[in-house]
Image (cartoon, rainbow, N blue to C red; front, side):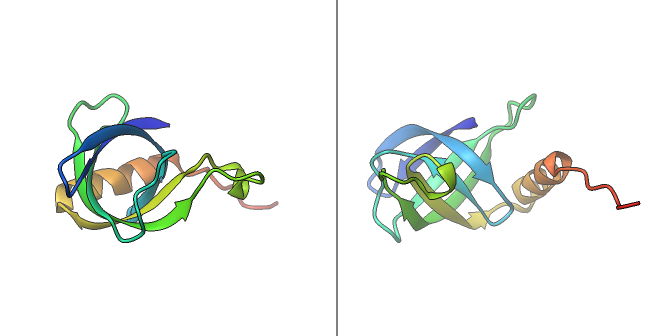
Length: 107
């Protein structure tokens, strides 16, 4: 998990945790979720690199606290990145590629 900063359209900001990231979006652990369709700015950095990635995003999935959690995920929101610089997109692609499990071919 990586700490991130979310800034909502109304100007309020809060800290949260990135649980999962891909080139198209992220899953953020958050107890009190904004509504579907909410737009926000998400800022975070990768381990060993202080330069922040910034992405405009939209809330596309809600996972509220529930008795039987979905896939053991903590409560949170699914974000789809809709505006991200090419440089930051490349940084995410590199990070994801570097952290994918290495597959070995069957013998």
